[in-house]
Length: 261
Image (cartoon, rainbow, N blue to C red; front, side, top):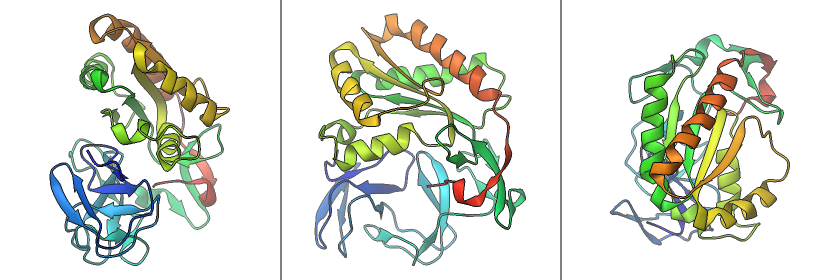
């Protein structure tokens, strides 16, 4: 696990710099040694693989854009080599397709408008592990939710395993908290459940203070004593979030409100 950058989801091919990184810095991400060819500012994306033009950029476990020019592993992903507003992105797991070609109409597009004022092009349910020992639980819950719900109105059910970087810098102004806030509040999620063990729930309370006012109907937090006893209560909350999110309707919105990254 690298403490200097964050790979949000195991399927991602990019990581986010948690602190400013200097050229020549060596990182180890998922067992891969990466040497940065240039400085990368905090909060910016780093390629974890060699990417060809046309390859998808995967963040949060889903495509958010595509490569326009060859990118070496360790390179800074920016507007010179990538685009974040693609047309016809297909999920790499081949289970869904997010076709954006029908959404755009000059300054008006179609999306899911959230109470925050931001809008997304997907309507997902996200399950986030805030403790290492609940990682297996979020995967089990995702499988249970897929098997018990009909799938109508929801694009993806996405489990996010525990990532130590998100909780290793508890200072309110740290980039890890800012990245976590971006994840929890991302408008592509119609429902979000953050799960922590009882021993770690103080970290969640600290983060909630940093988060400030949020849509408690869309974003929920829960602590569990252990995975076995917590599964039932977590699944109950997830079904409530799922049903609520499935009623969201796609509407015409100003292009300026749309967020894909």
